[in-house]
Length: 374
Image (tube, rainbow, N blue to C red; front, side, top):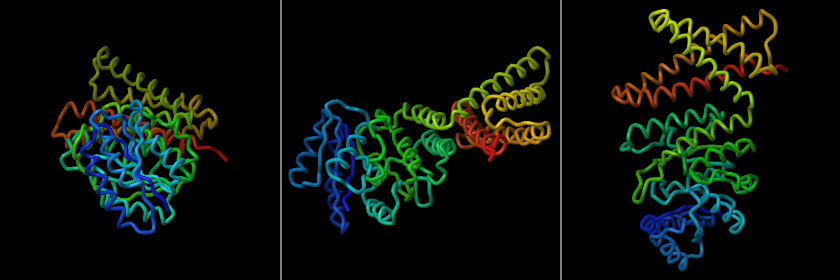
């Protein structure tokens, strides 16, 4: 079988110069397969493409694509994958970075899983045997782990633990069924989108553990916009497939407004203790959400009859209590892990708790309270 490793570069002259000989040496130990490297360079001013050309003149399995303009990390991978499928007729397409965070020695293990019949193999940092660098700062570890958890919950990809991993192998016959031109091009979030689309096409998914290394050289690709873009993409994928989820979010915002208005009113006007005022405020929001979800978000599964409404409301209330403790758990966890940092608690722990609580609510609402009939 033929495999192609797609590697995007931008100002990585030293990295790619060191990586290509290592890859070629690794290829020599993989028998029975033909391996190629497709370097997609964003027209680097440091001479990265010259280094690749020099190696390619001595080895026909090294290929270079130089973009006229830097399209973004997603665009580079998409260009490389398209080339591997259309020009090289590869059976499998790898995605790999040039900065030595991805260990070339893992290539053999990816191919082994491919031979076992898996269509999409992901190098995971979050399964037994996998790891992230100990030197990573706390906020990066926190966001990476809980960002993956959030995406898994929203998209329902529970069998995959590392949705944002950049080290992957795809079966080309399945990859060619996806319109790659419609994937996000500027950031890494295309990886989430591609995984979701392949899962919908019934791809056989699996993970292998990887030791994720520190960058060897070059500028970090960890951009803040990746985090925001990932959250937006995950929510939009779910909304597009489930319109009721968007309505559910709107109702949730209404409930949050109701709870906040009553809490502030009872506390500031009625001079009630906030610890006491939160109870009627919380219950009022629960009642509001239950009514609006029943008549709007899930109107196609509308509850009818007093007995059914009462029994489902009890379940609805318990689900919301669970959401409350999830939020509290994130707050407590962020305090413990950050040594009591108020900033991390308020701006990372609390928002993540709300987001995971929202997903918790939706899963129980759609599958138990307003479960499809028939």
